[in-house]
Length: 95
Image (cartoon, rainbow, N blue to C red; front, side):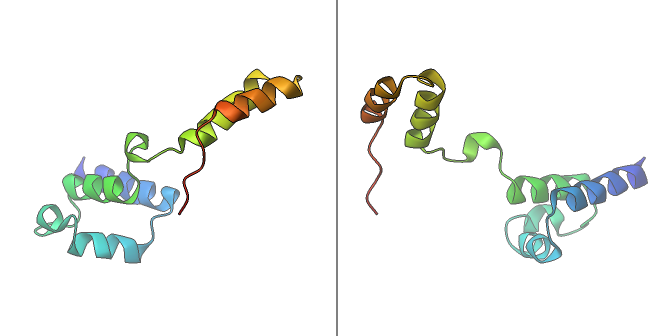
């Protein structure tokens, strides 16, 4: 059972494209307490996956981009509707 879990973790890491350098950096920093005794544990694999690819709720989304997509979907044939909708979208942040 444990060997199947190890194989599945390795396959998951290969499929999502996490490179070895990133994993080694994570093992030495963020997941050090979890991965220290045994690098092949399930908890270590979970920590590596969560660190390399955070869940979508933690990724910041640009509200202007979402608004522009909504305008494009709602006002497809009507250009004046599209222009009014764009004007109501939040302005881009100045960096």
